[in-house]
Length: 334
Image: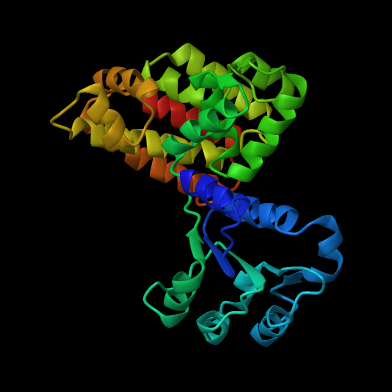
C-alpha cells in the first residue's frame, strides 16, 4: 500500500514515467493505479484526442507500439492503457524494443494481471530502467484483516477484529470483493463509526453466529453444542455455506495447530508470526492445543482429507453434504 501511495504522490507532483507495467496475482491495486492514471494524468479536454484504452485480446504488441509512438495533439502527453495484457503473454517480450526507446510524450500503462514477467529477462530490465514495474502480490489471509483496518482507518472508520475476520472468512482474500462490500457499508454508516459483527450481519448478510469463524472457535473449545448448531445451520443453507470451503478452513486450522505443537517458543508474538495469524486469535490456538494433543491433531488431519474426497463425490455419491459435515464434526470432537 505504501508503494502505491508513493506512486500516486509522484504522479501528482508531475514525476510521470513513460511506462507503467503493472503485474501480479492481486488485481486490486493494478486496477487502482491504472484507473488513477486514466482519470488524472490528462484533463477532460485532452482525453478526447490523447487517451486510448486497448484490450490484450483485441490487439498485438505491434498495435500497442504503433499507438504508443503517436505524438499527442494539443497536449504535453498522451496516455495509452492496455487492459488484460496477460492475454499477450506469449508475445509480451516483444515490447522490449519499445521499452528500450520509449516515446517520452507517451504514458504507456500495461495491466498484466495474475501473471508477472521474468525479472531476469531484457523486457523487465528495459522497463525498469525508464519506467515503473509494480508487482501486486496476493495477501496472505492473516494480512487481509490488517489491510481492511488500514483501508477503513484512511476513511475515518474502525472495525472490530471479529468483523474483519467475518469478511475474510466469507469473501476470502479477494481485495476487490472486500472493498466493494466496505464501500457499501460506508454509504450506510456515518464516518468515525465502528463496523461491528452486527452491522456486517445486517448489511452484508453474513451471520455473526453461524459462520466458519465461529465453527473453528467452537471446535477448538470442544463446544459440541455450538459446533452442531452451526453445522445444522450450514446444512439448512448449503448455498451460502459450501462444504468445500468449510473443509478447507478446518484443514488449515488443524494444520496450523499441528505447527503450533511443534513450536518451542509459544509466546503469543512468536505464535502469531509463525502461524501467520492475527495476534487477536492466538488464545484460540492455545486453548485448542490443550483440547487437541499433537497425536489427535494428526489423526484429525487424515480424517479431514478423507472427507474432502467424500465432499467431491469419492465413495459418497448419495450422501448429502450436510450429513457429511455432521459426520466429520462428530469424528473431530470424539
